[in-house]
Image (cartoon, rainbow, N blue to C red; front, side, top):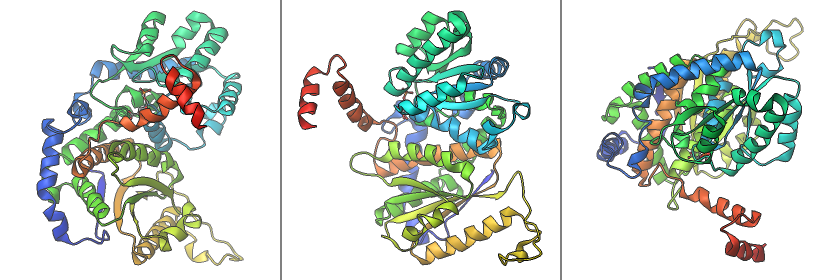
Amino acid sequence: TDIQFDYANAMLDAQELEQLEPQVLLAHQQLHQHTGAGANFLGWVDWPFNYDREEFHRVKQAAETIAQQANILVVIGVGGSYLGSRAVIEMLTNLFYAHLPTQKRKFPVVYYLGHHLSSNYMADLLELIEDHEVAINVVSKSGTTAEPALAFRVLRAYMEKRYGVEGARRRIYVTTDAEKGALKQLADEKKYETFTIPDDVGGRFSVLTTVGLLPIAVAGIDIEELMAGAQAGVNAYRNPAISRNICYQYAAIRNLLYKKGKNNELLVNYHPQMTFFCEWWKQLFGESEGKDQKGILPSSVNFTTDLHAMGQYIQEGRRHLFETVIFVNRSSKPVMIPEDQQNRDGMNQLAGKDYDFVNRKAYEGTLLAHVDGGVPNLAITLEQLTACAVGELIYFFEKACGLSGYLLGVNPFNQPGVEAYKKNMYALLGLPGYERLKGQLENRL
Ligand code: PA5
């Protein structure tokens, strides 16, 4: 496996973890024998082996076609329908890819839309794509989510005006439910190429389905490698014995810390290119566990950047948090520190060393400081950010999340709380069916 887990600084006794063994075993059975809450959303557990090979092949073909058609792919989706692909693409490609000169870009640039309702963003994106060839991938399992539905409405009109109905048809790719939903109906009617989101995989667990794979493949990332890494994860993290399963250790320890009042988890990275991975992770755990008035609040920080912003709080603020650090041992693009004759910054000691060395020392120093400050620390280490390692890391957190949710005693696979804002928004927008609620809400505003 590509991942190591160290909980030596979790500030727990060894027995505390051992005592959780029966509960971990039960949660493991719930995941594998489908006996827990939300059991009809467990398709992701064996997905890295069970995925549809024909559709996977079609994804690769579509990615090639898109690369011929366009130099920009706009992915329209929100929540689980965009965070995963964005996380993977940012981790595995040049962060400044879009700004490279055209001749240095072999693959289309992927931009995101439909994940908010900001008019400025939409207008800016429309301005940007005007001078480029464009393809669209609209991703929505339900097909009725307001943010992507409206964004697709705008973009579809734009594409049909610009390329004609037939030209737009060839450049629009739809990822949605196999049978149900407004988007599926529209796709059938318009004869868009369509990919399927499996019924038994919820949005936040869907990055390794076509939802994530099509944009990821378009960005030039090897999706075979990604799936191979996830397969390694399935094999590595199916052992029910907690002593032999680091994924279950992580899930169990965060629940132990939660019970001790550490109800905020900070996911820490040391590479800006992992910012969106943390966003994906926040959705995964926040939407899975934050219910029934329970759950750790997942948040994230980018180090060392945020040591100059959030570092003070972490070191000395309220002691209700713990850190989970993802540290990458080796960069794929090492940069050396040069000698400086004048040595005004006093750093000549570091000349000839690379940035990884400095980043590691920053990590080690911070780890000890935060532990001294009373912040329990869990450390996840990857050798390098490769497609394979990322595939395994995704699976590590998905499995940990399922297990952790069952340990907490919630259904990790539903999200009833997401409806409350939608209902109010639809009512305030005056959509049919919400007439009474509209009046009630308006009286309160
Ligand atoms: O995890 C989830 O289920 C949600 O975050 C969804 O992914 C999100 O609400 C988007 O839904 P849809 O794909 O149906 O548009």
